[in-house]
Length: 298
Length: 314
Image 1 (cartoon, rainbow over the protein chains, first blue to last red):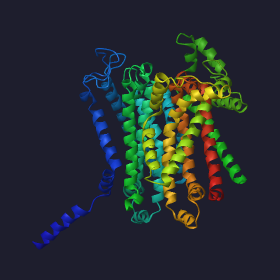
Image 2: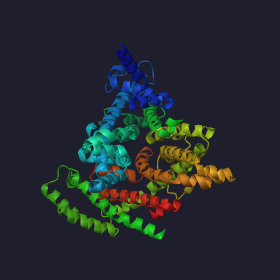
Image 3: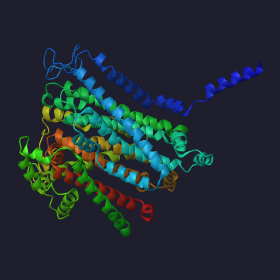
């Protein structure tokens, strides 16, 4: 009986006191006002984007409003455009495209880039030199120009914009992951794992990754922000996105002839983009603070 | 210092060479036939053959590459496939406006960003620091084409204080030139200045907390000397790195801002050349980009050497 009690006590003690590294980081992130605003803002944006077809009661493409360039009203909260389309719906659908494209593509790029960076950082040698020269070459070209070039090679289409963002995202992660790996690989716990006979992939992906990963999360938030900017800029140029398909950048461009008559036309997509990018930047800062040993001390 | 600089310059040669190979190959990988673009859909096989012959597209890739590299080194950039204009001429027309915009925006971003970052970093949580956080939050979040459109709407369309498009050479009429430059420069410089301000603030705060700064204060130096001679110099290296990286942002921004403010320049040239498969123009643009990137990094390396003697011996 007494043995059982002490065992219960032990379990209680553990669940109260011990938290995983991730739960701990998450707590610090949400306790930071910046982090809380960023997470809250991104949740609102994500819900608005995912639920766009439900929330926006007008069709984004149908030209069915009662008049052109209507100012915001209950029925058309963001007004209408010069073709009698509902701008609230077009904004939300544009947001959905931008968010989905950059999120999925950056995650793909992050995985590829990180695996490559960890691997060459651990193995070193000629593979390291070759991969890092490639990375340097890719980083030399501005992201938007990479996207231009890839859209020229592959043709127009959302999936090709996605590929362009993957290509843009990879080198940043590779460089950062490699630097993290170089910092970790000579530490004692790696030597211990080697002595115990763990295989190279096991050492990299089970032991080192946990320690080397957190700074890469900051990069994920920043890369998604860059991805959103690239999608928006391509939309502005009308590259890769069909004219009918709503995009935030496209809305800003379409508004140009009507600036003096319809303030709501450029202001809403601009504000949505700004809010999204602001939240992503705040999130990057907050993650950085949550994982940094310096702020943890204070 | 001299051997250090020579060493760095020599290291750039293979990179430049690889850059020209990459620029050449990327264009050959694009599916699509420039001859067809030039001649149009109705061209006969003979027409296409003649055009390819004229452009030298029948030679093997190594032959084409060597010929192009030779021309490039002799300063002859060749002729645009689609417009027939000489590329030298295309560049001499379009480089100055882009250069004006790029340099003005970069200088403006540095003049706003770095002092703001220093003021915020030296006294965290002061009024300057709050101004800095507010400014960077807005400036980082708003894409340059959005701020461009909004500036255009308020200051050109509504108030009529600034022209909404076009460009005047700074050599012809400096005042009118700056008048045309003001809005594009602000739109382009805002996000860049915000990034610079943020990094400067972070590095300055780190440095100001270190022991040698306390020592400098303890031996009775004035606050401005402490900041300018001791703190600033030690926080310059990361700031220079970010400044070099931001040149890439200027290059991207120029393409966007030229479109927003309908300014002539390389941005429009490159977008049109890509759409029309104008090999030679795109190839040359890519080489120009590589040269700019390599030069900027070289300069950054050399400046590191000046700022921090330890870099020279490495």
